Length: 113
Length: 111
Image (cartoon, rainbow over all chains, first blue to last red; front, side, top):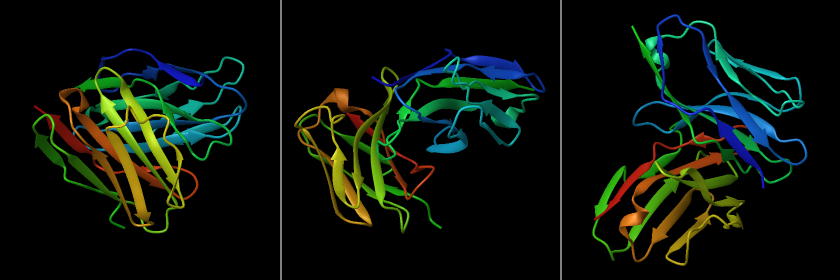
């Protein structure tokens, strides 16, 4: 079945460091891909998305490119801030399945000043 | 917009008791999803509704779990009887098309 695999956390970085969180997926057809962020004690918020191959999603300095050839959707940010500390979830929505979302296990990011 | 509203935010109950979690989706959204989040299993889709009709309930763990959506503005997730392994954070999400909006979750502890 469809699945998402993320790099394991926790990831600890210093402020202004470069961030990469790897995400790969397995899916039939043409899924849409998402990154969600969960701040402590809160629900998930959509960070960015891409709906077809080679699309780049971006928001708040974060970017991810839909790579069909490598089935990947890695999250990157050039300079992280303490306020970026959260858990990040990669997710896919299978094609034509009514908006169903399949999540990766989440990667905890901790940014130190 | 108030966003997705869930209640209660925290619930502590004893094993064997009935638990009811509530969700009010964003007005105008036509799809509603219930997720469970645990350290061991991450985020799991339990069930989702489209236009108040259950579409996929394959993630519901067992017969102790049931979900209803009597109208477009309200859904419940019921656990009867509850067990300690049901302890988790339960999220509700809604969407019309495009991104899903998640509620703040209900943290359930079954002792």
